[in-house]
Amino acid sequence: MAEPTILLLATYGLEVVECGGALALNARRGGRSHAAVLLCREVMRPQLRSAAEILGVEVEFLDFEYGHVAPDVPSKKRLVEVIRRVKPDIIITQDPEHCITDLDPDRRQAMILYLEAIALASRDFSLEEIGLPPHPIPTTYYLMPDHPNCVVDIAPVWKLKRKALEKLEAQLRFTASVLGRRLSPEALQALLPDVDPSDELEVGRALHREMDRALSLYHGLLAHGSRAALAEPYRREGNFTLDGLIV
Image 1 (cartoon, rainbow, N blue to C red):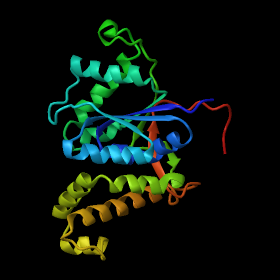
Image 2: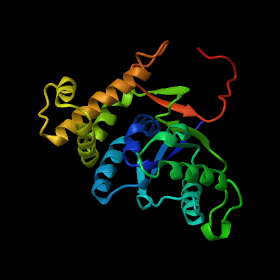
Image 3: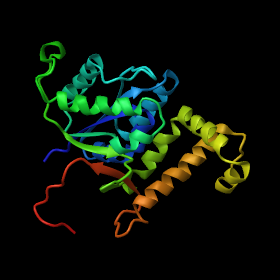
Image 4: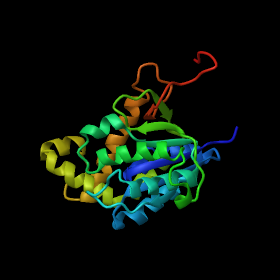
């Protein structure tokens, strides 16, 4: 059986790295990993391209505007065109449960847009205008879910994921700025005892290293009965179909 084509519908560029383990594993095994990013500022685009190249991911930018994402007809057509063109076996996108309370802008509207586009891509919606035939609804996985029901062992590509993150300097600086305001100097010192707190880039880099490793260990080695050391969490939409119980 051929390796799948995976399409990531990303609201923000960081999501390419957040599920970079699964995408890199698929690419390494001969599958196609493609990311379509809804919102990405110009300064971050070359950085994200470099990160995606490390992971073996094709990336395109959909040029939506911050604060103006809506599940309107033109937006649905844009997403449907992507799905029909890429023809994914699997779609990864944000978690509908998590996005409701996530205060990143555009999350909630983007979720409705994704779900509508996935459904419409399989129907006779705008066939003549888009010029591509319907594509069956792919298997859908939600990244960073509140309630995961599966994990991917990413130990074989952990170094690639780390290396890709290093390219996202704009994101690292943003994280340092946001968390630097939230944390007291004492808390930051406890987290990062060997990092100069005035070096914004290094603070962001070190914070992401700590957070990513903690999250991957929590869903891997520290999870009850886990056979993975480092893992990415996902929630698969719908039931798993098995030929029999698996170990």
